[in-house]
Each structure stands twice: as structure tokens, then as C-alpha cells.
Image 1 (cartoon, rainbow, N blue to C red):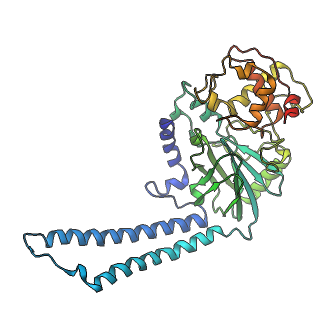
Image 2: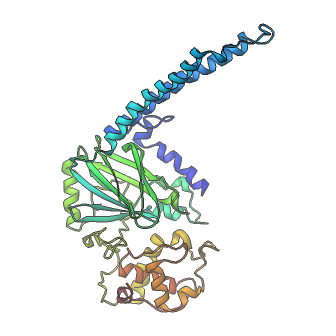
Image 3: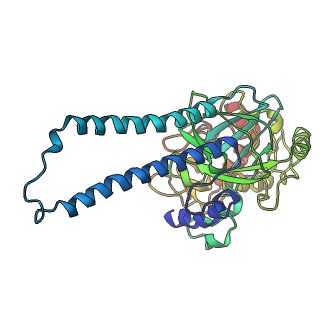
Length: 404
């Protein structure tokens, strides 16, 4: 885990925003980020001056008034004038720093007159994006290359994976030059949406909606991560924002409404899309059913259709790798005792209804996966019931739909 996170640092450092200041916080590409950076530098210089004055006075006193030169100590510690100075001076310094800081905070919180709204929902461990009023929604999760490399005994060198742990299967695409309001919430635990180039991070809290905004000035790809300790896979929840010129963004948006894949995904972010169907999101109204893309390589199926065992296993393998392998591992060995092995497990070889209920509602450390489509859940369950020596039958999407 630590090695994986350490390996991700060089990749982050290669981002354009980070490259601007290797040893300092990035300037960023928004008005807010520039204000935050300016405030950061102002406070830094004030602290440097205070440090020089305090330590200078201290070292001078130690040297100039050492015992060998002044055996009789001074008594100015009872001076009223000195007491007033060292009480008033810090107060003035703090007020001086609070004025620009307050102005920046007020500006950051002003989401009025925004041109568009993006609703961000945190899940363990992926992000849901909803373009409010546009009917476009999708999930964004760790890309397949990073997910494969991070598996125990994968045999893949993380250093060989471009943007390891900092790439996603589907980036958040935004227009340049528009004031974008972000509304953040969570479907399970507290997450924090953080892209350094935008200049801020904000908590996504279950049952609560936080707001923030950004106006991106430069097209590009900006990366971030969940900044909250949201679970054992906290480090595998990256964020990728792709900022496009207005005309390219509108083209991308039109294609999303038409159900096509986004051509605007650059080679840098174009890992194979594993967009998750959103027929019935965990948070009511979060995701538009139009965003249901399912597995593009698997046969399309409605809840009432029956799929063959081979089709379910083929689809289920992808769904399992994308949603379950984080805890139960790609080889089904799990991470006991929290996440048990699925080899001969009583859950995946026992009653089907109990396994469906556990996937939909979660149990103990396992989060609910009700936001997945009926087909993906049925396929993933079928995959677990027919892998690693298990032979426990198939589950159809209609059974999952009935259990919701």
C-alpha cells in the first residue's frame, strides 16, 4: 500500500499544475487557486519575517547577554510597555492575515450566477458525476491498468503503469471559461473531492450537500484524489478533470446525450471505459438512467431477459474486477479476516437470495452496491458462483430486480 502510494507521487508531480512549483503548492488554473496560492505565499512571508525577528532576538540575547558579560539579569519583564507591545503586535499581525484570508473564503463560497452545476457523489470507492439539467451522469473509478497493478501478487510493476493510481476510466469533462458550481455529497462515508489545480478540496458528507465553484482558465487534464480517510481503499479513489474549450465540450456533451462514448478522452485518460450502469442509483435521483451503458462488450439485456451462463460469466468477470477485486482480490482469495476468501465460501455457494441481498445492501465492512445495474450484479454474482472451483448456478438480472 505504502509502496503503491509512493509510486504515485512522481506521476502527480508530472502534472502541469504541479510542475509549476515542484517544492511548493501549485498555482493552479482557476481564480480561486491563484488567490489561495497568493494567500499562501503572503502568510509564508509573514511567518518568515516573524521567525527571523523572534529567533534573531533570541540568538542575539543569548550571545550578547550571556552570563560572562552580564552576570546581573535585566528586569524589563515587568515593563508595562513591553507587555503592551507583545500583546498588541501579534493581534495586529493576526488581523492583517485574517483580512485577505476572509476575503478568499468569501469568494470561494460564492456559488451565485454559475453557468452550470455538477453534482458529485462519493461512493466506496468511486465518484458519481451528474450534469444537472443535462441528463448526463456516469461513474468514474480507478482505471483498469492501475487496478490490476495494485492487486496482491499481480506481478505488475506499478512504475510501468502511466499515472499509476491517478487515472480513471472516465474523467469529469468540463468547459473552460464557465463558472461551474459543484455540489458534493456522499452515499456512504465521508469523502473529500480534491483537485489541487482547482485550488480547493471539499468534504462529501452523507446526508449533507456542500458547494464550491471553479472557472477553469486553461484546457488540460488535472488530477486529484480523495483527501479523506474513507476506508481501506482510500488511496484508490483518484479524480481526473479534463477541461475542454467550449465548442469541444458542447460536442462531447451532445455525444453523451446521444449515448456515445466520449471521443474527447485523450490518450492520457483513455483507459478502457467500464462505465457502470445506473438504472437504480443508491441515492435516489443521483444518476440519470440514460447514463446506463453497462458493459459494451456484453450482450445488452433488460431485467426481464435471460442471459446464458457464458454471457453472465464474461460480463461478471469485468464487473467483479471493477467492483469486488479491491477487497476480495482478483483471484478470489480475499483479505481475511475482514474480506474472506470466496473459494468455497458459504456466501457464494449458499442460497442465491442471501448473496443478492448482501450485494444490494452490504454487510459489515462490505458496502452496498445497489447503484450497479441488475445485469452487472447478476453477472458478478454468477461469476463468483462459478469461479475458483465454485459451481453454484447462475443468477439472472430479473432475480436482482425482484430483490431490490
